[in-house]
Image 1 (cartoon, rainbow, N blue to C red):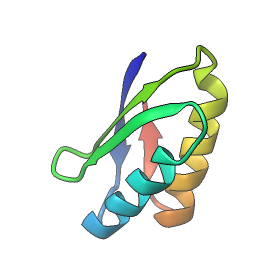
Image 2 (tube, one colour):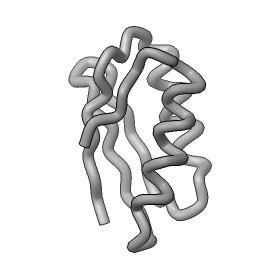
Image 3 (tube, rainbow, N blue to C red):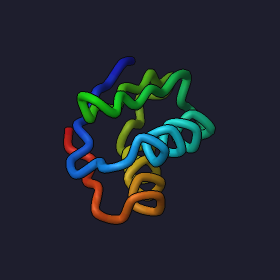
Image 4 (cartoon, rainbow, N blue to C red):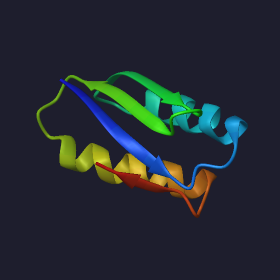
Length: 72
């Protein structure tokens, strides 16, 4: 399943790359891509339980860039 999220207040291209790397390593994530210019995160997941993954994704994003919100 493919999902797209908006990253509100994403201010740093380097942080976007770190987020992408961290999210890509989560169990259940098949692919992850952060586009800094459009402030979008696209993931492909192999599990139906996206709620638990969303919490982990938000935690990774907040750890790297505390003012950034994951919307979607």
